[in-house]
Amino acid sequence: MSLSIRKLGEHLAAEVQGIDLASPIEDSVFDQIRKAFYQHTVLVFRGQEIDDDQQIEFSKRFGPLEPTMVNDPSGGGGWISRLSNVDDEGHILPASHKKMLYLKGNVLWHSDSSYKKVPSRGALLYAEEVPPEGGETEYASMKAAYASLPDEKKNTLEDLVAEHSLLHSRNKITPGVMDQKFKDEVPPVPQRLIRELPETGEKTLFLGAHASHIIGWPFERGSALLDELLEWTTQPQFIYKHSWKQKDLVLWDNRCSLHRGRPWNAENYRRVMRRTTLLGDGPTV
Ligand code: OGA
Ligand code: MN
Image 1 (cartoon, helix red, strand yellow):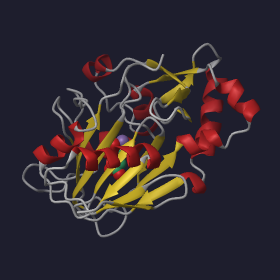
Image 2 (cartoon, protein in one colour; image 1 turned 180 degrees about the vertical axis):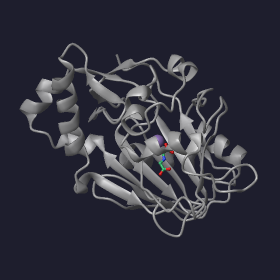
Image 3 (spheres, helix red, strand yellow; image 1 turned 60 degrees about the vertical axis):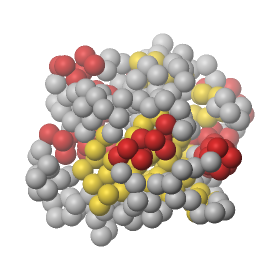
Image 4 (cartoon, helix red, strand yellow; image 1 turned 135 degrees about the vertical axis):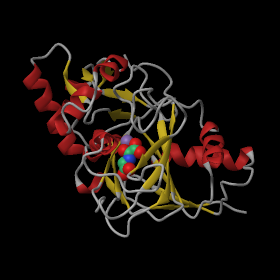
């Protein structure tokens, strides 16, 4: 079987064809996938029939996994986050359900786990069931957004550190959704605003919904800068929009891209996704 890689967006995303993720993958083939991942930031694999264990196995080839948070309504301390509007009996959850309120935060542009001291390297999301319309996921390249900034601007950003917190992003959309135990699990953390990707030496912006302000600056000034950079990063030319089909697996690099989930008619249509998350190398500060 020969692998083919077809670009999907101008600055990010490619589809990988000619691979069955349920079968053993030779190292030489996996190396091509890894290279494509670092080159394209988002990789799409369509028509994959994989269960939880096969997803975990494939994910681990990229490096160690990040466990879900104990207090996360879609996690619970295992290797899989279940982003689903369906309960264990197969009924659609009401919009007021705690899990739905918590998942609502995903509509904001974010990088997974940027609120953890060691932010995630990447994530793999598999579509078990998808709605007939809506529910797409959009990805924006923080790497391309950085590269297109004027040099003087890049220089002013170089050494800045932002504070990231899950409470900050959840308060923007569903205040009160985190109880005290959950807040204690994820205290605010510092993250460099400009990161370097070790595999390629490229630099990237690092921001998103969890980033509240710049450490050492007046709050309003820092949040205004983060808003400005977010607007820059999410311009149409830096975006790839993924319209899900059942059995799609999408892999993305959380270090140099943002993503957000788009709404769908969640009261009527099921959307059942499962995610594995790649552990980052270490703190950015
Ligand atoms: C995620 C996420 C958005 C979506 O899995 O990390 O943000 O569209 N998903 O489900
Ligand atoms: Mn996410």
